[in-house]
Amino acid sequence: MEQNTNPETLSPQGAVYYLFGATGDLAKRKLFPALFSLYKEGKLSEKFAVVGLARRPRTNEQFRSDVYDSIVEFCRYKADDAELWNRFAEHFEYMSLDINTVDGFRELSKLSEQLEAKFDIPGNRLFYLALAPALFGPVSFNLRDGGLLECKGWSRVVIEKPFGYDLPSAQKLNDQLSQVFKEEEIFRIDHYLGKEMVQNIQVIRFANAFFEPLWNNNHIANVQITLSETVGVEDRGGYYDKSGALRDMGQNHMLQMLTMIAMEPPSRLHGEDIRDEKVKVLRSLRNYKSSDEVRENVVRAQYSEGSARGKELAGYRQEDSVNPESTTETYFAAKVAVDNFRWAGVPFYIRTGKRLPVKTTEVVIEFKSMPQNVLFAQRHDLAPNLLVIRVNPMEGIYIKVNAKTPGADNSVQPVAMEFCQSCQIGLNTPEAYERLIHDAVRGDSTYFTRWDEVAQAWEFVDKIAQAWGEDKKDLQSYPAGSWGPEAADKLLAEDGFHWWPVNGQDEDKVIWITNSGK
Ligand SMILES: NC(=O)C1=CN([C@@H]2O[C@H](COP(=O)(O)OP(=O)(O)OC[C@H]3O[C@@H](n4cnc5c(N)ncnc54)[C@H](OP(=O)(O)O)[C@@H]3O)[C@@H](O)[C@H]2O)C=CC1
Ligand SMILES: O=C1O[C@H](COP(=O)(O)O)[C@@H](O)[C@H](O)[C@H]1O
Image (tube, rainbow, N blue to C red):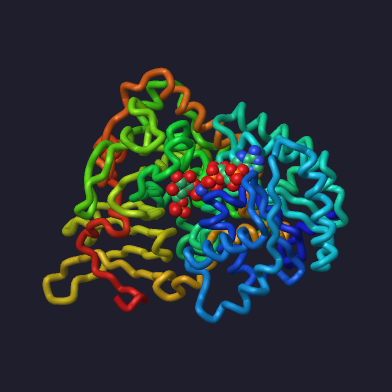
């Protein structure tokens, strides 16, 4: 069936949702709550069914009870939702199935036909693979061989990260998927693209006359992207120790945010046009040419024992399922160059780490300073103008400008004008997974990563990983609960810049003008 790819006309359609990995952590924490929210908002239509799939045995009742617990735990359930829940739960079925046996898929095919008849579903099928990446290939082949793709409507597959470990493994994975699905049927999740404020970057840039003309190397001094986390590796030590911060956050979320900041305006607001522009940015990233260049521009570190908010915290090597001699980085910071006409000469500094003092994702656009030889700049140490985009947990933007201090002494002070979206709209903002599942079922792939983006991002990251693999001497250490190694500050200091404080860190002397009532 021809897919509708025009986002203007896309509306939710009835479908069967196949949740592979239905007994796993992601399903529990993100996917069930997202489906319930969509149902509550009327975005699922009544013509749907969800089939939970995993190896361990579960009755339908047990599965529904797991789903209920998850919705209650993750705050999507309110006291007056009981009737809604009962109707929602009727659409859930569970089937025990091992990905590696095609017989189970044939049985699933029969169950699908029954569910489509029962709920009047027009043959659309969404396969959500909340599974280890090694299973993406086998599950795709068995979906095809078990007859699941012979349906009257569309078939789409949603793939979780990580999409490979490096370019060759990602290529292999993609080759396997491409034997079964067309590119437009593959929806690769990067949940950062589902975040409200990441999507808002385009609007801030392209809908504001006082930003768009300044968005280039004539006016912007540098860009800073911070994704700091207070958590350690929790119960994902086994996965994380093989991945590290660069692959876990850098290859995907950080580079995707960078592309949203740096891309050219697309000719139309269509998914393919936006993704075309994003991939051009990735192609313009300057690859580090030698291991020395990597060491000069990229800092890596691992957390050691420390404390935060009065609590003692274990070092990374003491975490469950982590090699006690691990050299995996839990932090990295990099200076990245985008070699095109718009950005030549503007450094992009990116950093992420676990066990840092605050949880926040922020983008800071630092504008060039006023000429030093005129007017106020002669007499005052003027701070540069900033545009700060707060992505999470706080959502909003603020701009920092210079203004006269009230009074007679003619001094100048920085003033921040803040729009705090989360203070106003709060929990009503849809969660990233909710938005992305909704997009996938509408066939809108704008906020999913296309294969050429993934490949290009791996190419950039592989150069760093390769250099790191040669020699571990540059791996530094930082106490859990601190802001990471000093070398990350030096990256900016060498260029005459510094990291601007993020939300929750000490703000310098700024007067706030806010809409949040604070
Ligand atoms: N958890 C998270 O926050 C995030 C996870 N992801 C990604 O999502 C994916 C899933 O993660 P997560 O839920 O944490 O993983 P879990 O280990 O918690 O769950 C894995 C799921 O896969 C099922 N499974 C494993 N082997 C088979 C098999 N042979 N046949 C059928 N089912 C199988 C397991 O069920 P059973 O044992 O019953 O078979 C379980 O339901 C991974 O790719 C991960 O990287 C991405 C971002 C965040
Ligand atoms: O993909 C991942 O993201 C989370 C951080 O996501 P956020 O939405 O809470 O900011 C990170 O903890 C995890 O290691 C990584 O795999």
